[in-house]
Image (cartoon, rainbow, N blue to C red; front, side, top):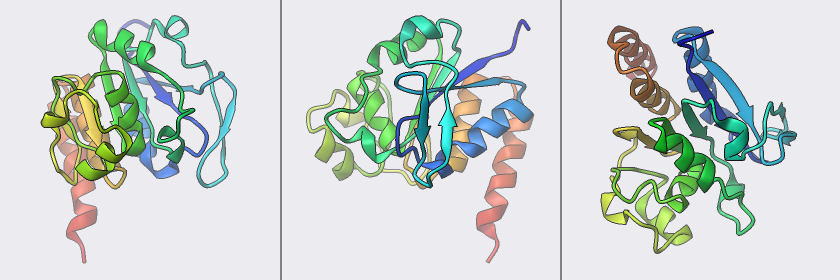
Length: 195
């Protein structure tokens, strides 16, 4: 199916259930993309709520040469010393013009891969990211924002912003789809306008 863009969703144990649904469903249903779940060994992981997520592929770059984008979904396990090193996957996809996004603790994987060195970005707070990665490249590019930040093909968001993460990520991947993106923004914004 030529022209269909493929997005790899990186899930590790403890993945935050609320951080990927708007992006994955919108990408597939409204933008015609293909969503591919990726896990450290290509097996099953349990989410924060205990749901089992089965992968189609492992996280290595060689198995994912067809990806147009990668979304790294948050988990408390990204902060540990044994968090998976996905730098090769991220830099490979980015190097061929792909979109790379991270939300919540998933932003640590982007920082470790050096993708924030020249990109404006956000996370769960400046103090939070510096507590976990005090010497990461690009810390001067940090933006203290409650919403997603997109800089060219690098998208980041705090864990509290899955709606703007979805819109910003899809905007980077499908910049020509301005009408659909505007509809998404409007629809998601209505939720917060009420009350």
